[in-house]
Amino acid sequence: MTLTIAAFWPPPPHETTEARYRQIADAGIDLVITGNYVNDPVAVKHALRRADEAGLDVLVASDPRIDVLMRDLDPGEEQTVALIGRVIGDYRAHRSFRGISLMDEPLPDRFERLATGVSAVRSHGYLPYVNLLPSHATGPYDEYVRDFVSIVRPALLSFDRYPFLSSGEDAGYFADLATIRAHAAEAEVPAWMYVQTLAYDGHRTPTAAELAWQVNTALAYGYTGIQYFTYWTPDPSRGEGFRPALIDDGLPTERYDAVRELNTRWLRPVGEELKSRPWGSAGHTGPVPDGARPLQHGLVVSGEVVAGRYGERHLFVCNARHDAATDVTLAARAAAFDPATRSYDPCPSAFTLDPGAARLLRLES
Image: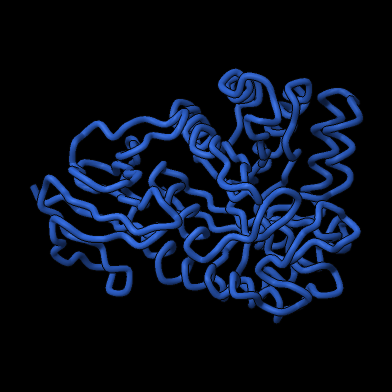
């Protein structure tokens, strides 16, 4: 498990400065996914220079040549490969350049084109990235993801589904989380997901506990890419009623502080601890959401949790509730990982998890 912490929608071109990119790095983020009008080679190269200085990586998600090539044109495989090579040639001098986003939320009729693009980007040694639709925006989801994997042969599987609605919680969140993870495991590629940081059309502003809940449920399911949507607040002209994100009108919001704390004091050290431990399975105790599975191994006696098994001895236990604490009882002796010291301390068999919180346990028996 190699963890990537990414942010989508970085500062716009006139705010693409060394200080702004160090502010991104200070939040524990290591990958910038472009957008927010950083969408031509001149603006992208400027962002790459700032990322070089700040020690960040950049995924170019807004080059108009790629957008036109993947969505509108079909010049044939040879010319497609040549054009992608020229795009990569524009950026490859920068240490921070990590790869190309070929398309966001493709429909199946684009899969063959994407297969050519993914192969071309991969042949140059860079990351070919495609983010998939959620299940409510396409046909049978298992078929959609399976066809994407078999045709495109992606380097990873990424999707977005934002669970905190104005009317409550999106009941399909766990089903999509499980579907993407299952196909990623079968294809032996990483699974990445997006974390909702803001309110927009039909969605409400998440709390700090709800930010942690999204991250921790993803870790329970073995995800190795955490992508924040969005970093900078999209401007009003884009529609959809976007409210403040991590940075709003140039100023950090309370969610920036919550994400910085979450990334630097929890997510990064836990990711380092888990990177050599293969994920095996995830299951729920208490009410099991649609599309999810009950916990099978019996290590959790009571409590409303989602738990992921890593290797032979590690269990990542997350509160399945983001709005209430849960009392957990274990069936085995365990030690709990302390992210501050990177060590394990004895853990009582009964403990309480705050809303959205989690513990990484090493089973002792």
